[in-house]
Image 1 (cartoon, rainbow, N blue to C red):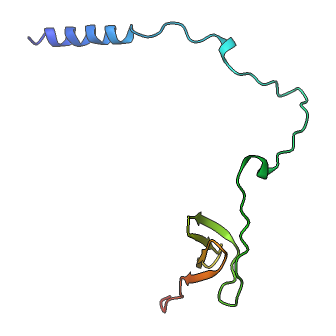
Image 2: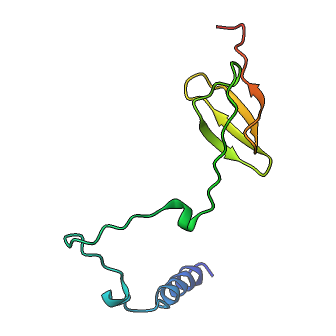
Length: 107
C-alpha cells in the first residue's frame, strides 16, 4: 500500500500533463502592430460614442469644491476636494445638498 500511492500519483501526474493541446498557436493568429510605421491621426469626439451629460454644480460659500468627481449615481453626484477631504453631495441638476467632513477638535 505504501508503494502504490507514489506510483499512482506519478501516473496521474503523467496523464494530466500529457493532455495538453500540443503546439502553441501559430503567429498568424496573433495581432501585430508595426510601431515604426506612420498612421493617419484620428480625432475622437467623446459625444460620438458615449452619452455625455454636463452638470453645472452650484457654487456658494459653503459649496466651493475643486471638483474631483468620485461617484455618479441615478440621483446624486459625490465630489471631493483634493487637499482637505471635504465631500460634497449634489443632485443630478447640480444643486448642492450636503457637505461632509467637519474639522474635529483633536490634533
